[in-house]
Amino acid sequence: MFRLAAALAVFLGLTACANGQRNLEKPAEPLGDFKLGFSEVVAPNIVKGPLSREASAEEWTAAVDHAIEERFDRQGGEKYYHIGTSVEGYVLAQPGVPLVFSPKSALILKVTVWDDAAQKKLNDTPEQITVMEAITPETLAGSGLTQSKAEQMRNLSANAALQIELWMRRELRAQGWFGGEAAQDAAEARLAAASAAAETAAQEGPGAGQETEIAAATSAKAGRKRETVTE
Image (cartoon, rainbow, N blue to C red):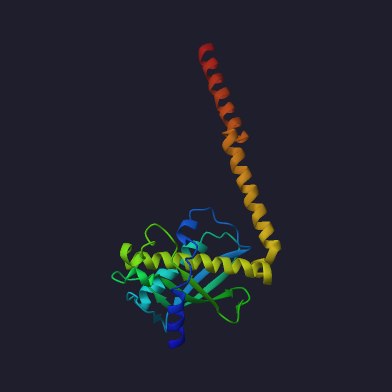
């Protein structure tokens, strides 16, 4: 526990992380044949770092679980995988800390991915993920001054979920996770085909089948008019 607390103190001097929430505004990219089964988040031995606001294990597990599901529920593969996450430690910058200390927020997680069909872990040793808060106008002077605890936790959890995805993509290429490169190529091809079909439909307006139905209905209506006039 002391070692983790010391690590959190060191992480306060690291640079900021990519913005996980802003990244969610982009369309989801395929992740091989991955489909999220369930996300399980625990925090049995969570450590609060120096100069931090207080947050309970329950608050952290809820925030991280929401961020993981929000990110990975967008994946449309056909094979189920589960993500197990342990929240290890955190720092939530608090107001009142002199800016000379450059107060930053940080989060440390350990992550394991399970193959549902094979009923086994893809990584026997949990992957440690460390994230910092993203640089935004609100965090330049210290997020403790401009954000509530809930906002800080939301931002860190979203950044963590993004870093988990990036790690999983690296393992797809290096270890063949989620069907490997072949599954990735197939998923990207399906996405490109669907996008092209949607663009064509938007440019052409109603499909040929719909146009035929409209023409047939118009012809039938005209025929009934002629019959009525003849009678």
